[in-house]
Length: 255
Image (cartoon, rainbow, N blue to C red; front, side, top):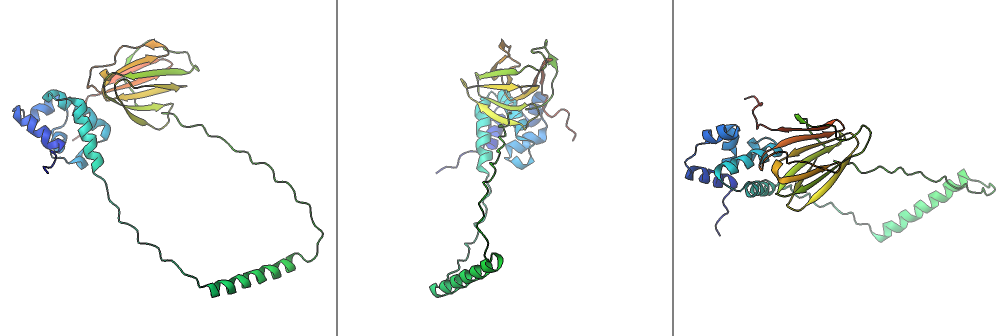
């Protein structure tokens, strides 16, 4: 059976068919040429974090006239296939006890307990047992989802100390990273028609892998789309307002 073509070989073939050099792609989408080369050679170990790779793969696909969602899905499939197989642990040795030895050991243990009881508790009157105090169990609430700072601000959305509510609905396949009130970051991929509601006391931070793929409502106010399809944006929601900033891929990274 013919082996499936890898994502890197597919992108390289499509680029060369259009007679476009890696340098042209790098200059147009503002991504280092070495990262584009690593993608085409399927050297995933040379690539940066999963979040950034998704962002520039989307821009690369759009520049070549390909479907960004299909390219990102193929990248996820290729990286998940690279699993590490751990050696199976050797089976533990089982110790077999003969019935004769079990009877002898059991008898010795019983006699030892009887002697110990007679030494520690000679002949004392029975003591009425004291009922144990009930244990108090503390319930820890589940941790919610957060993220990074951005730049374009709106008027204050909510007064200080009041709960913030953010509702998002996907109209295109969109990867999102969410951080709420300083808790650990959570990642999710939303498909068209899927929706979710986030609640926070102080701050909600998002990284949108496809800024044009979501419809958002903040505290019952419908928001305009943050960016275009395929663009990566950082968005922060606070009591003071909303800030959004488009990410320029790898421009600030040093060689």
